[in-house]
Image (cartoon, rainbow, N blue to C red; front, side, top):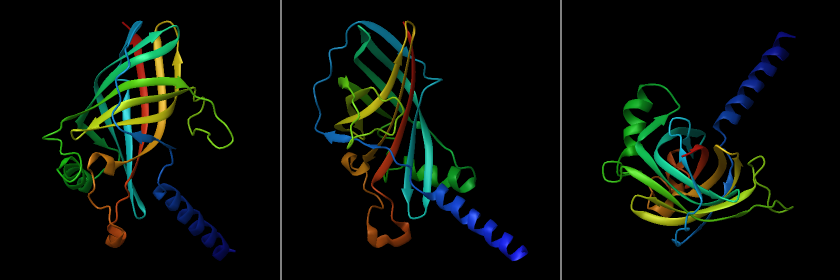
Amino acid sequence: MKSNLFTLAFAAGVLTLASCNKAPEGDKAVITDEQQAASASGQTFVVDTAASSVRFTGNGVGKNHPGKFKLSTGTVAVANDQLTGGSFTINIKSMDLEEEGEMFDTKLRPHLLSGDFFDADKFGTATFEITKVEPYKANSSDTSVVDGANFNVSGNFTLKGVTKNITFPANVDLDDNTLKGKANFDIDRRQWQMNYGNDKTLGDKFISETVNIELDLQAKKQ
């Protein structure tokens, strides 16, 4: 009996560990060339930077490294209950890793901020500027991981001096005074000249090109 209980406990522990190490799955963002920014019109909502965040998860063989960035500034324009534009600035140097310990604080974080990845001393901020917003409609072959996704948002994302347009589903909840937005999508970091470790011959040191992004945005009417 004890043997069976031990086996069950061990199996549960292995399953829990495997679940923790499994890379999160988001909507696959469509990445294209830079587009013309939308002409923002209507009421301006100012991002609450204390309540908003950009969460990222990079992953390798059997490991995930999640963290968050803070937004420095951001505004969203709304007319007739529709997003018409907006722009956001992400503070790269605000990176906060969720894993705790000396290795993460003194080795991993400085490495991520170095020229191998974000090159934060040279490119201290990233920006996102909305170029188009369209209604999102799920179908049998396209269902968002975001509950209640109601818009496809496109915008120019500039990171490390490289600008690409990305499109992803989002849930945007709007009332008279507050706007809340959520999204969960995957991007290919190589599109922004972030290639370090993306060589499968590295074995267990391989780092996936896919990075998961979770946006949590809150803004208030100006």
